[in-house]
Image (cartoon, rainbow, N blue to C red):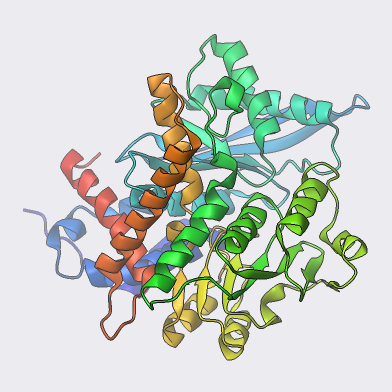
Length: 451
């Protein structure tokens, strides 16, 4: 009988780095999970013998392809596309498509790895995947975006399916882009199936999908505060980003009685000491969605606010913080500043927005800190519900979906409590989320044998 080799964490991570050179985001994501999983599996021989963590940290497949398209001037443009299918032990691969110049194989591998645990935490039958391209939709005409999406799907369609891999939107990919890609998929395959989520309501989409990630992050934040017999009434919130997740997180904070002080984009952040109320949130939504404007123009519409160029908002004193922009936007020194200024809770709306130093700072300070794989799972949860609706050829009412979203976020919170309760009133939500997600996927992998 084979005897497993119980390597320690440094040796395991050295192997990950060696196998994935020049992929810092992916290595960071694996490190953050492995720090907790190694302790959990220390006395569990079956996980060691079957090399479960090693297998989860090796994607099932990474598909890379060329995407050729023509711009409006007739110039041929060449981009690179990817689909990372990380793990399908508990269901079809599920995860978004991102169009942004920063997209690399490393970024997509980290996102697909995180997605595997996030999807497991929802309780829905979904594996983990992610895809995208280094195509930048900013500054492109609608026809250029359409041509790119059609070319992208002309390759991607071979690798996806309603029971195989179900992509969704992400940064740079909204309802318009999903529509273009779904239209091309239908054109090529002659199939009308739930192969993409985030679709329009007229052709198979789900109510509240747009709001789900931001709302879910705030629901999770409220669950955390409730463990301290607190709520959001009267609390000040600092939020980064000004896209879909950030604006809907702000909206839900306001609905629950909180006061939002900041929003941001790649140019800097705005600070509104009077609070960003629903009217102002609606202005931001319209400005960013329809005019593709910059957040700095907020101060022209609302002169009491100030704009700080080239900075993130973590120096603004607050009770709660929600990083909702992108990965590694909140660094160790930012975390120290938030704590020094009295921040009580952090709920991540983006994927891995806090770097490892920041994660360690929050954990050492024993504040309420929710990693993205737990707190921003609301979006993929409603995507999973959209898959169910597509399979049943039906649509659920908004009130039904809102309740299901609340229930799913409460379920994720309960899972974090199960594995993250450290005693003395401290919940390590990172540990709870990592172990809760890992155990579900790992146990399914054990059941399948060595495949």
